Image 1: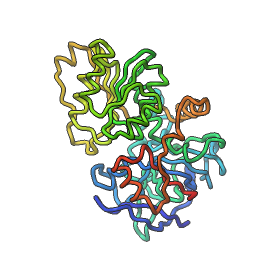
Image 2: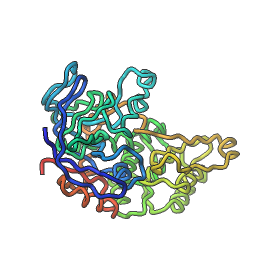
Image 3: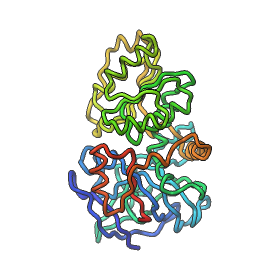
Image 4: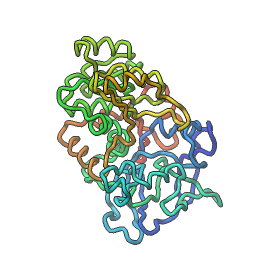
Length: 369
């Protein structure tokens, strides 16, 4: 089968629209017709070479789709089902899945390789294999059955795409990893697609004050729309607010969700939290060799502070994505408001230009356009 896709061939090259050959699903796999795909900074880090993966690759890890075909042995998913993709597969059997930490599933390592669980590839450009992560910037994709979550058909597929990554990652960073409780004071540094959902998570969890920090005025406004009590442009202003609101005690939780994390972001979050408070680091600096955490150990120990990393917001996709859908249906979780622009597949480079210009909370490739 042929499929049009946006691929990256080398570091710093543009997204290139090409026609690829797509294999049918093998045992334990499903073939999907993509409905929508979110434009995330993480994918652009692949294009720019800041995140190292096997190239060429069809990037895109956030999306929604309709199942077109299933491989042998697939019993829980059928053609016609609506699904959201899980960028880190969950096998349900490894040590981490069995202990309720499926965001750390051993299968997650296939992201950097770009193949399927058996080590082979389903995208091909002539005689060359093309990877995917799992590859949502394409009209069709074949993935492991472990890479999808079936959702109710009444959920619009465009907004459902956000449930694939940015919503659970942000929401879980506050609720699951940060452990935000009713009455807490929370600071979120960086309120793009992930950070604004960290704001929503804190609000839903019952935080008394939620301070959104972002230099882009548009993102400050959107943060207030989803429930932030305050929005400022920098951490110095946030610190002044925290001192006033908490009478000098500090934030209970600070979540770092900047698209590019610097040591200063983590230090600001560390300084902002109270004794016994928690810093959640969700954003990355791309390369695993970049050191972004340098903190005074004495204060860390004597003030009993905690600094935690968060991948996928600590969620268990098969159970937490349905919970998020229920919150959306109840009117408590905003999804429609997060999509600020829709693009065709051919406009993917334009979409990323808008992302870098600070115009979007979440841009979405809409395959119905």
